[in-house]
Length: 459
Image (cartoon, rainbow, N blue to C red; front, side, top):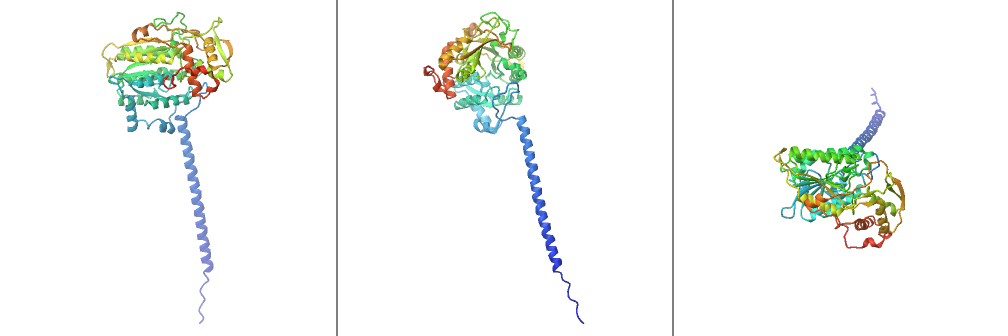
């Protein structure tokens, strides 16, 4: 009997192998597709997070565009350059080190606005005489933040650390006072500028009123309470026509929102002195100028525009009189600030409660000799060896006042304030700094090099 031949399975085996191969290929394609989808989803989520944090925590920003909100920033680069992350042990160590006085009976001073013009000068002066200094600044973009960063770098060379933060950050302020028992606060942080208030009014309320109140709220609760010296402004005199301006003159007619917020600050200071026993001294600055100054000030942008051949606007009053300012050199203002700190009495409150009458003062810090703006321009023309293209126009109704003149009798009586720098001397020092900082020495008159003052030391 013939046996049946076994069935031919080779085709079946080949078909299974082919199907297996297809399954592996499809599996690989599915895996690759899944990986691509996962990668794209992850990338999309990452971009969404970056977009979110960019909106809520903006990075370093260039010059402010008029009319938009100011931004502050804190990024990894600034952390790497200027200090450890806020709140950690290394950060606390740096805060304590910067705040510790190096002279007997030295002060420990929190300087708000330390990255600013007056704040950086005062911080350096305090540190050089042996006081402990800790800065606080939000480095906003009202004007070029790189200038503020350059001041910060200068202070860091002198072992003054600036904490990057905002006055309205209550927990941060509380943390600073927990780490350091400050004896004094020099409160110079503010939204400056008269004209900008017409474009961004909320920034003035946020900084000059809400920020000041937040600082006072924290200061009233700490033990011991610090003595506080703070920056008011000559702008509070507003439409006052009595000259020279005295602390006894009326200040209830502000000509700008900036002036109104500074006047509000004076009333707020009175309230916290009366209720909580805080020692408070307000300083009314008169047109401060000098090295490391503010680019939004006339002397600064006049210098820039003259060097670039651009026309400059020179204001006249409505009755065609010259506008004049009591220009006050930065070194004189620094002496006034330190004099006010040195004579500030201790606050009398404890645990948020007043225990006795506390010191409340207000002073003018000016130069006592108003100079027409036209004379300022003439001095700059000589220093820059360049004729200005002048455009004389009527003063617009933007909050500026036609004339300022300080009576400093009270400041002289109480802490020996006596300004000693005339405008020509002060502008020569400013121009010397300006051309060195911006690298344009070759374009200016050699007379700017007269004198031996070093750029850093003039702080």
